[in-house]
Image (cartoon, rainbow, N blue to C red):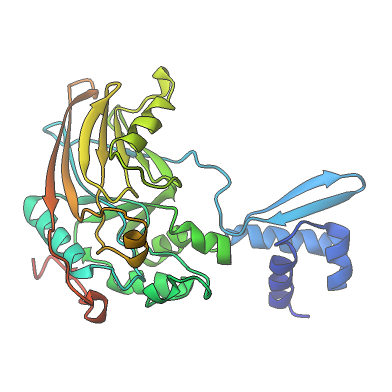
Length: 329
């Protein structure tokens, strides 16, 4: 058995908890060779955890899933003590309801207005549905790698602009089904896209703490309930200054417990699943300017909403690549 086959076999065997001795027996190699192969898999981003128990070592493969959710990223304000970014969420690539033309328009407007950073609050893909699921036909891309390749090719690219993104509940379906972290895959393929982590990330702007978040919880009838619930879960000393909340398909800004809460809308037309669950769906983006004082603390948050009231039917059938370079700006 060649080395590549052994690595693939170990990946499959460790999808369920298994002992080192049993892997050694099934592959016909000694335990030292098995551990060397485990190390090789870890270097490629496969998280196989091991635990000593009795007289053996037991293993489990978490795939490309991160084993901690404590992600953070640092930004700094400009000479005017300002940091500008566009906040979007739920692009839902792979869905027949995706709106690439609207996403392209958001990037063009951002470029014109001098916004060079985009923060995407999760659900960059529609994820996966089992074949027997009634919503499986709502996707035109039905597997993980095709969705990653599509984003690599079609996601807008504008010179001087960077997209920072977390993955959300929809994206996590790829981990659950295929043990593939699409955030890492996209970041490797696109130098202008930075993966901030799964579900959440603490983004620091000078000394301002902003929590970028995508929930696994369903929507509620009142639009402010989920952000308020999230803020209530923070101890006073752990509260961020800003909460950027994706995945709710809504647009709202309010302050609660001294936290500026911004619910970020989708960039996707209403899917059949949204319609069946009676989920309202606001489409658009926030153009946000965070201003700090001379000490780097929060001074103000200005957020301008941009709403799209009309979507483009069957937009996925006519994808247009936005590639804006310094030569054609």
